[in-house]
Amino acid sequence: MFPHLVTGNDREALRFGEHTLTYGELSLLAARLADDLRGRTRVAVWATNTMDTCVAVVGALVAGVPVVPVNPKVGERELTHILTDSSPDLLLAASDAELPPGLAALPRLPIPLTPSDATPVPSVAPSQETPAFVVYTSGTTGPPKGVVLPRRAVTSNLDALAEVWEWTGEDVLVHGLPLFHVHGLIVGVVGVLRRGGTLHHLGRFSSRAAAAELAGEATMMFGVPTMYHRLALDCEADPALARAIGGARLLVSGSAALPATDHERLAATTGQRVVERYGMTETLMNCSVRASGDRRPGAVGPPLPGVSLRLVDDAGEVLAAQDGETVGEIEVRGENLFLGYLNRQDATDAVLRDGWFRTGDMAVRDQDGYVRIVGRRATDLIKSGGYKIGAGEIENALLEHPSVAEVAVTGEPDEDLGERIVAWVVPSGEAPDPAELADHVARLLAPHKRPRVVRFMESLPRNEMGKILKRALNG
Image (cartoon, rainbow, N blue to C red):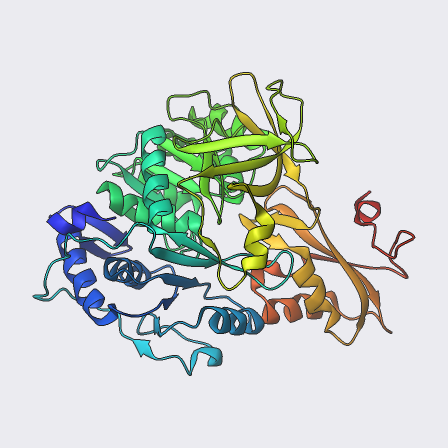
């Protein structure tokens, strides 16, 4: 997985602020940690945006031990579920990390950050079917599910991305993405280290910080639409910032669709057209616009090398049309697929059909094979600030508040976030303070899942079967 750790060299691998590690130093740290982890079933990593997280993940992968990344803003209930479901042997966390009480019973192992005379990383790798990560979904249809990703999926997918993005060890990637999900951690950290390149992590995204990096050594940037929206506005206001962004070799956007207006704003001010890609936790990346391809707004490009993609109708019949109009559900198969959901064979069986993964995403294909996503089969997935958020879990959390009798949660367009979370609430008595409801959700789940808007109603529209008509709310 990490050939450049085996050889070791003086090239900078990681930079977080003033803290840097070369490949040689990271190799020694990973080997030292791996010695303490060998034989473990799986380990949880308190995935803060720090060097500690990267060392912990690399050390576990070198040892062949699956990593369970944990969002440091996770709510009490989600944390309990993840720990109960994945049963990690140990917790790896930064020495100064403030941990919630729910982690008190889990043994904690220090993460080494000072290289010592340890044995360098061995060249022998575990089986490619060995699980590398257990990444938990957003809980759209119930408690979050643990997606088991094998080493085979990680390595094959990262190599395919390297091919289409012309990504090499000479590239320096900059991003400020969180390190607890696929985008920031697997593609944005493991992907860099597999290529032998360098990552400059911003800690937290800002247009000015990203521009400073791209005006210097950085050649690539990863971001979500919310970041690119802010970047587009800032580039319009600051020509010097726009020139710095324009010096990038590649700007990549993912996790949600990038609005065409932001595509055009950035193109006009920077001369750069953003590359979009499409993936899921269960499949990693499925499609991407090529670095040398047509970077047109609204398209995620053709399937990656090694990924087969088809569109099917409601009966599961394959749609052959590539007319840019015929809508079907995306199904994919290939080396990029997960092994299944941890402890959930029923859920695994429900999304697999003859080896094809049913994504639930609806799309059309253009004549040249480019895929354009048009929406979700389900109506309860909200994409806000780069996160995929399930309406159902927010509704369940709100229903636990004593002042909430009924509730429906939807998403509505937001220029900054993509979508903002809206709660339609029928109060059980006097209407509560909306901020109190938002804080209630943030405490139980995570801050980014809190409602941005609360609208009070006397009743919710329902059909004859009693199902809430969400389209009527948004209409």
